[in-house]
Image (cartoon, rainbow, N blue to C red):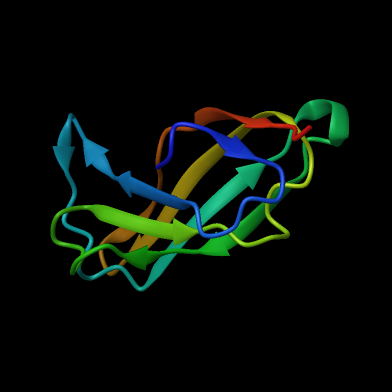
Length: 104
């Protein structure tokens, strides 16, 4: 993931490694791969969900999502969380925060 995200950025990639006890999880059998974004509380703290893709084949635990124009429309502290479903269960990752910066 890029180190800085701005309102209106397009094609920024979130590349996330899903780990368990610091070991990448083999996600190759995942049938559902989602990223949940939560906007800043002052803008309602609304959560929305986007589909993720395997970065390679999923065995390395790495998923990716490419940002679209409508994803980040307000500046502030956002958060994201990954959700996966596999034949053996359904899991959420830890939540992580990031900053979306306003433009001039």
